[in-house]
Image (cartoon, rainbow, N blue to C red; front, side):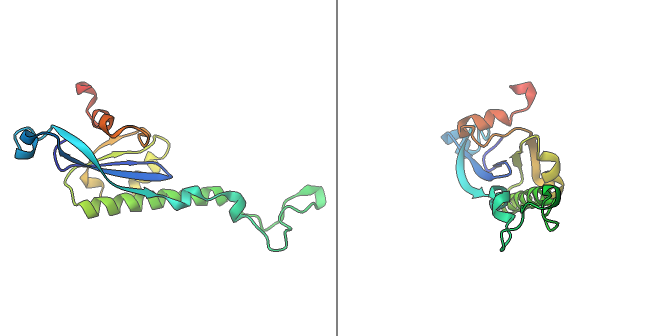
Length: 157
């Protein structure tokens, strides 16, 4: 990681972006560009991920789960609602990551996504060519000083 690189740490509910800035005067002068610190740029909350099924499944007459023949649910119930919410959240995360990459216009981007969503989010990111390294871990709660070590190649750890 060098001065000017962009670090994006994301999950389905939240995205954090950091910029690699020089830690020492030598790094600022370009003599030691790998001596960096991460400065927080922006945080984004993904609204779709915070939706609750109970808020979305309502009926104005209150008859959604009314007891009937064999206590079956109403026929208008959406059975794929969880999948739709998940797809919307994934799409929103990918769009927000694209927006951050375009706004910062950096040549190298380091991205962290949880293993459970990485295969769903990556195909939707348009600026994949700018992503230098992907870490399949949920690093949202990781201290920014330890993030630099998480993005180092396994050989250097």
